[in-house]
Structure formats: C-alpha cells, structure tokens
Image (tube, rainbow, N blue to C red; front, top):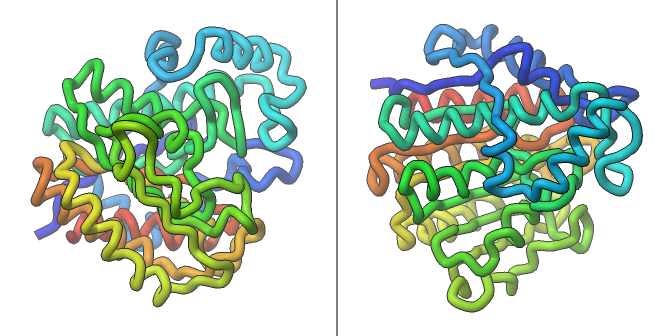
Length: 315
C-alpha cells in the first residue's frame, strides 16, 4: 500500500536559481515537475505550497551578520555571496528563505506526525556555512532544520544521509563535534571535485568521533559501486537509532552531469530513498524528509527526483 508523501511545489521555490547560464538555473523545478506529471506522481502525492522562513529561524544556524549581508546584496542585486560560485540577484534573500522555510515545514510535519514522509525538490543546500555562502548555496536549510528540530520539536538524534556528488561540507563541519548528528555521505572523492573534503578518515571530533561516515567514490563509480558501499550506510544509520532521517538526494551523481564524474542511474536514488524510508519506519515513526540537492543535467534530475518520490510512496 502506498504511503502518503508531501511534495513541496510552487513558483516561490523556482525563484531560487541563478541566471546567465549558471548551472543552478531557475528552470530546475519545472524540469522535475514536468516529469512528475508525466508519470502521474502529482496525483499520488499531497502537494504543499512553499513556506518562507523568518529571520529568527535563519538565525538558529546562521550568524546575524551574514543574514544582514544577504539582505543588503539582495536589495541591490550585485556581487557574489561567496568567492565566485554564488551570485547575488534582486530577491535572492526572499528566494532562499522559501527554500529554508519549505524544509522547516517538512520537518515540522514529520515531527508532529501529520506528514512523516516529504520531498522538497529545491532544497538540500549543503555547502553554506554559518557565516557565508558557498557552492550555489545561500542559506543551509539542512543546518537550520537540524537546529530547529532540536530547539522547537525536541528531536535531538538526527541521521543525515547525503548522496549528492559533492561532499556536504557545510553540514559536516557545522556539526563535526556533535555526537547526536549522525552523518553519512557518499560523494565523489574530494581529490577530484569541489569542495575537496570528506576523506574517509574524517569521522567526527571529540565526543562525536565515530558518528560521521564519509565514503569517497572514485570518478566513474556506477550503480554497482554504489550498491557495494550502501550497506555500510544502512548499518551505520540503524546502529545510531535516530529520531528522524534527512536525505539529501542530489542528482549530480548521475552519469552525464556537466560538472561531476560519477555514473549512477536513478536506480541508486530509488534504492537509497526506499531503504531509508523503511529504516525510518523501523526506527523513528516513519519520519523521513528528502531534499533535492544538486543536479545540473535537467533530464537527470527529473529522473532521479521522481525515482525518490516513487520510492517514498511505495517503500
């Protein structure tokens, strides 16, 4: 029997995208939605409108100084928010707030049981630091969600799983010494790809040592390589017994992405989402929130994200 899945869709989410040929364009949501409709998934999910985060919510993770800087550059629409990957544009602050707010709404629905399973396609901005943008990511909706789950919903032990081609450095380093943030990340080896982090020996610091699992994958790794490593992730999450699971399902790990070198198919994403949904049923009242993450080949992201949604429906 199909589970109920909440899917966040609306024009406000599509605003988070950069122009002038930038890989993270505003057309990414439309590419996903067209494929979801083609497959009839739009009729099987509960559609939720995007929600905007407040400045107070952002400040649970980000510094007030950085938030103010984004507001200023959003007003004038000029310059970069990092060292050249993440340009400001008029309204970038408001667009980024809708990404964060939609993720916060999804984790709240998971926490209170009204929608244990959700997918937010334009979300999973895992590179932003507490005090800066990075790698196309203005605000780190994952970091804000983790802080909010703890402060607002009383959920402390959180499993974060990341299958984006890029290492989720903004999440990893923000919680590197946090023993209750269980972190598992399969990514293209940082010796070959931005951000250059996520070595296998990065397992957490201090009391958190051993609560972080980084699995660097060689360029060209395919579904067979993914499935060989995946049981380590599943066992790691099960042993941690989290209260909620967050999945960053970046589609840039599929073959043919223009800026990465992994070679998965959508079956890898379906496998991960389905396995984690079943684990969530076993361990944490079914609570799982999946986030779209990266992906710069539009056909790829459409296929990977619809595979995730279908897996969440059917697992």
